[in-house]
Length: 348
Image (cartoon, helix red, strand yellow):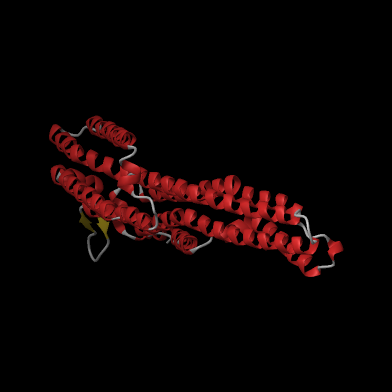
């Protein structure tokens, strides 16, 4: 954890320095293109777009730190070092994309009739800014990689727990078919089934751990969106903050849906369905006259069937992360319905 936070702090410091350098080199060019408008008495005031981008960069660093706090997988030791070639390739690819975009902006300024001094400032500013952007976007991809690595780590733990469940069911079936007193055999079988039910509850806790970082990621993404929508920093971005928030929201929701789909269809439902199918061989025979055994067995079947459906799965994975994500999403939705100052003026 310490190594990851140190690496994050170093990347953050380098990114802020490069961002500041870009704005210094740009001078009045980016004041024109990226300044933040602050309403007030008299004429609106302009503030350097650096503060808006710095706020967003800081929020993104907070996203990484928050997600890391909820994962067992380390960024440096478990994600970057074992896959350093992939990480380097991603960084270079993102840097190349940003560089091409930067050159296109400078070329666009020439087509717009900007003079050579303007284009020179713009080109010089985009050199450090391109590296800063590469750090920003590569960091975002790194968070997704961290979530993927944590998901696989927890999936391994779930698979191990699933094998324990299967062993308990196998013992229940063997106990039910053992020679001797049928009533004792039924009691022993039901005891093993009780153990299997308990192990399934443990597997549900593992599912919570598996989904929790995804929900936390979504929650902090929603929080960043709220920061952008409610603050003037959105005017620092030429493409519009609303488009940015839509993209971030789509990423967060897609992450939840994909992770949930994989967990449910490839893990959770399969374990419960297998348990239901195999425990049928351990059903207490009604001819034994032990109604309490039959009653408990049927309660287990009903409990597992309820857990198997999507509502049961949602309850199984629900934890503090899901509640936080829903709360943040509700706030973002509400904020998004509030008209901005420009919209209110237009309506007036």
